[in-house]
Picture 1 (cartoon, rainbow, N blue to C red):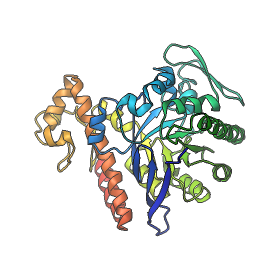
Picture 2 (picture 1 turned 90 degrees about the horizontal axis):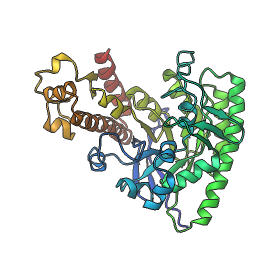
Picture 3 (picture 1 turned 90 degrees about the vertical axis):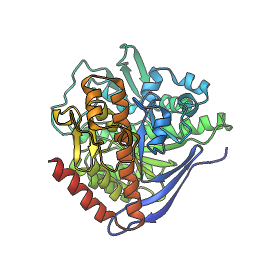
Length: 400
C-alpha cells in the first residue's frame, strides 16, 4: 500500500506562539492549514449541495461515523465506493469516531455533555449509554434499538466509509466528572487507542488496494494539565498520523489546553480540534498550534436566521431588515451577498421559505472559511497579532 498521507510545515509564526501553516496531503487532495473543515454529518452539509460547498472554498468535509452507521449503514457507503463518491464530494474527507454521539445522545444529553462544569446540562431523558472497558452499549436516538460500539467496530465503520482521515474511538467525559473518573477514563481511552491502531493495521493488510486512511489519536483529560500532558505523551509515542484534541473545555481555557497538548505531541504531525467555530476560539486554537478544526455552528445558526458580520453575529428576522436593501455583509464575495439583499433574506425567513436556509448557510460557511484563510495568510506574512487584535475588537465590541 502506498502511503499517500503526509504533513509538511511551511511557515512558523514564532513570537511565543505555536502557530504555523502547512499542507496535509491526502489521497483526495491537499489541505492548506490552518483550515476550517465543513461538517457534513450524514454525508451532506445541511441545506447545501456539494457544488455549493466547493463554492465557499471549503477544502474538506467531515462526516459522522455514528449517524452513518445508523443510516444508511457503512456497508452501503463502502459498496458505493466510499464517502466521496456516495455524496459527490471530490475533496478530502474526515470522519469522527462516533464516540461523542454515542456518549452524548446515548446519555440523554442531546447536543452536549457538559461544557460548563455545572449541573445545568443534566440528562433530559433516561440514560441510554453504558460504558465498560471493552466498549459502549447504547440505544439509537432514532428508534431506540440497541447497539454496541467497540474501538474495532468504530474503525471498521470508518474504514467502510473510506474517509481520508479517521479518529480513534475514545471516551468523552464531562466537566462534572471527578478527577478520579477522568483518570479511569483515560486508561480506557489509551487502551482503546491501541486497539484502534491494531484494527486499522489489520484492515489495511486485508485491503492493500485501497487509498491510505490516516488515523488520528484523540487527546482527552478535561481541564487537568497533568492529565492532558500525560495522555499526549502516551499517544504521541503511538503510530498515529495526527491527533485530535477533544473533550469538554471551558471557553476561556481553550488556549491553555491546546498549548499543553501541543507542547507534548510530535511537532511534525497535524493537530485537529473537534467542535469549535467562534472567532475568538479559532484565534486561540490556531495561536497554540491547531491545524484544522470543525463545527456544525455556521449552518446550524444560519438555519435559525443568524448571520456573521465583522461587527458580530446578527439575526435576519429582526424588523429593521424588512426594507434593508443592502447585502448581509458589504464587500462579501459569497454568492448570497453578491445576489440578495437583507430585505429578501428577511422575507424568506419570515415566510419560512427553504431557500433562506441555503442562502444563509452559504454566507456563514464562506465567512468562517475566509476568516481562517485570512489567519493563514497573516501567519505567512507575520501579521497574525495585528489581525487578531483588530478583528476580535471589531467583532466583540460591536456585538456586545
